[in-house]
Image: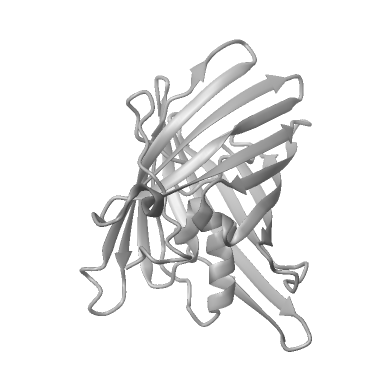
Length: 273
């Protein structure tokens, strides 16, 4: 059903240290510390060969975390996307609310597990805004798929290499189920993965690494059609309860590079008492 979405930009299977895990609906780049916090993430894409997209074309995620037990944290996220174009021929804009995410994060020893789902409320009345949202954050493209219920599951196992350096490998699964009438057979399974290095010094945290995704439910795709990756680089400044950050994501595979040159992200996390 979705193997041809955005020129078949599909992600690859990955195994690292025997783990399968993922960001599971949450971004890797904003500050994720603290069990009681709210975050705003603003993503500005630069589309390939597109000089007509207006400045306000962007994708925004509003998210929050709240403690349930000492080991379990609830997570929720609301996505929003806007697309605007202006040239001598056409001038229009669209906005769309994506599929909200709700889930839990469970800590056990050195592992962090996540499970959650995206509630299918996105409407295809504004298809350009939804497409812009999917391309802007392909690691969470299910946030902007209409008529689709997404279920995420993940495990992450950080490795502390020194007092300042941590390596975070992870990966997981995303199940996409069509909610359209007669669409019960249109179910897709994706694997997603990441490997992020993190350096903390004083009030600054720097991150660098890559993310990826792969369709598992299609057997007739070669590796190039099945996979794509993105390189990311980011930093966060911890100033007490307010933690601003900046990050950059660059597509590494032709499918996504044909559509997006890069994405710049601005984020602010507020840790609540």
